[in-house]
Image (cartoon, rainbow, N blue to C red):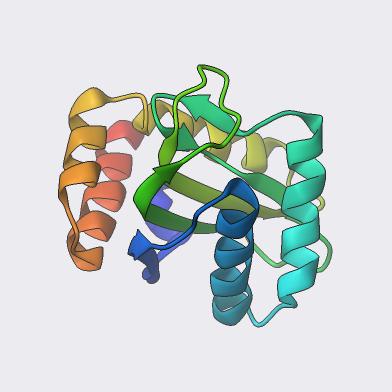
Length: 154
């Protein structure tokens, strides 16, 4: 599944403000709830529950919070570039400034894992990450994420 299928142009936030991991998850939940027509609390609780298992801060300033929601029709992605890096209890101890939120239907076992793997693979590319950090335009970020995803899928 190309990232263009799960990341809408209006789901890119190039200057999200958050001073803590909890606040970042609240902001992401709020934006996702508005875009999905869901309850913010439901999304936030799902993300917190996943974080209790271990941080989704994967290192190099990147976090991929994710979870499964009941009655969700399809995978949903949201990308945020934080205004200032925050402590996310990452595996490498580095503060996080790039976050890709991924929400999946409860029954989306393999698709959820494939999407997570695709996002993680893309965000391991130092060239892409440097461009994401340098870009403040939501449209350009969306184009970079979806074009990169398409070329990786080939």
